[in-house]
Image (cartoon, rainbow, N blue to C red; front, side, top):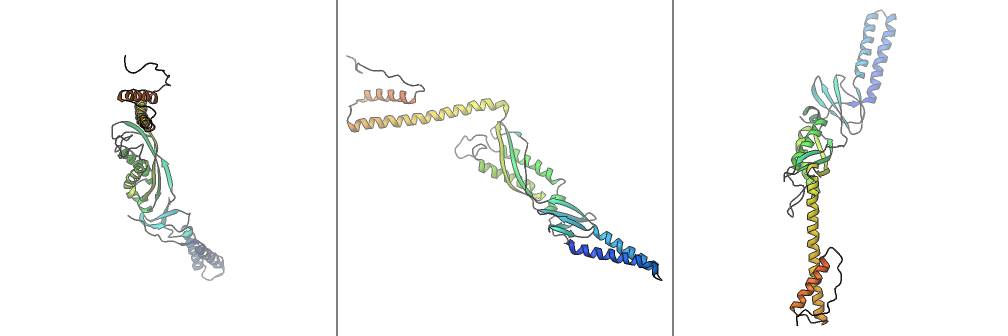
Length: 290
């Protein structure tokens, strides 16, 4: 079932028409007493007034970014999106459907990532009704449907990625936000297509390890950070030592044989890579024994 245009006309001209009917009916009722056939005028006036009253049931208002789904004895008759005061078949039943952009934040879900680690995750979903017929007739409660299916898609998406990236280039929940958000949006849209809903944006709003493993994972992250920092320090220290030896050779400050070079490299690496401030030691002897 797809949305189609429902019948309606501008309401202001039809108000004048209803007033004319009611006025004509009132004139007939008032003149019935002085006419030789008072019954015909009396009933004619009643019919006109009754028609005017019936026609007034067809008036309704349509706000901006809103649709009115109309039905005739249960059958879908169309959707009216024209703004302002409108008039339609007085036997139509009408249901208001908002077409505005809406958003909600899911509850915090506890799921396992692709590595099997329990995590907590939540998302913000921005959505909008684009087909009122599908939203009203294809699902029971489209707002509740959006919430439940969004959380289902979020749970499914989180199980496809690890929390942290282990290999370069492989997406993870924590490091590849744009990829994850696009995947989440596509997952939600696939589930909400039948409800006439368009997903404008979906973004992760909360991401953390579950409480029972949070401390252990924090220690692992700290260890990884320390190892990465040590690697950077050693890499820089080796470069500085190589530069120092090359400068000494080029400027001819001192001639160093292999043993003295090894001692100098060892001392410089200790100074550059140590956690604590080094204490100078003056060597008054020689590297070679007597």
